[in-house]
Length: 288
Ligand code: AMP
Image (cartoon, rainbow, N blue to C red; front, side, top):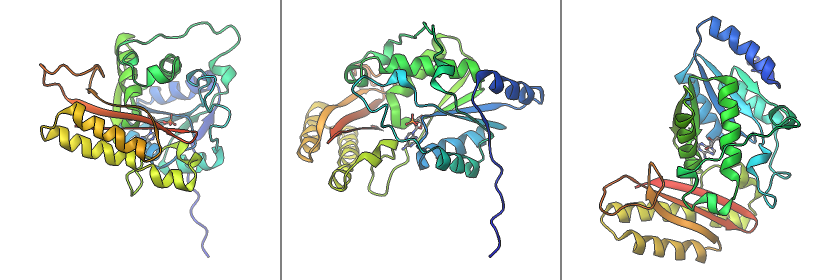
């Protein structure tokens, strides 16, 4: 049988110094640069971000870094899935040009003392309430990635919608000259949003999990059709809990600020949910 053509492997760099050397060379050749930050354990959702990055810029940098500062002490940092060989294969197929894979010490060397403290969409009582310190870690590491790579454009998934709004705000507030773009959520056939954490689900948990997207879809339709948001969401909460989830929140928020919507203003709404089944916490969201 004919051997498959060897795909071109992305360059792998582990230090900011090596990263900057490659980027300086690209910039000399006038290439614009897209960045896709990830924590690895890549799936079709991540691959869709790389595909969008390829369409948006000449060169694509993907970072893989399981960022310790965004995990709480009782969260899954040590057991977070790490599948680096498979990740690199997927990134080669997707056409990434460079993979930045720093060690924790490269990002947080001894004496590291500067964390960002985002407010605005990072202080609205959603994931910030259930994962204290999470967005400090996210904003800090993404700011470091932005200042290390200096991308023209950075692509994030709508899947982590609050994170996306926090990063947009951080980039604006720090005058970082990068266009932050949100990309659509990629789902399984039954509606479950792809997530690196889905591998934690037992078969019965996996079978129950699509209820989150079902409730989001039904609720968005009912609210768009004039239903009272609180009544609609309270039915949705009951449905999620009766499927075996412990609910953190199901809320309708202003899509830009994530503040509680002002009924006087006709701002766009986003429905956001976070819930735990067994030991696994899942999040999802939808536009109204
Ligand atoms: P993570 O590796 O989970 O930190 O995610 C890296 C990026 O991939 C983030 O911008 C996520 O929002 C995005 N992402 C994760 N899951 C999905 C998905 N199902 N569809 C689209 N983007 C996703």
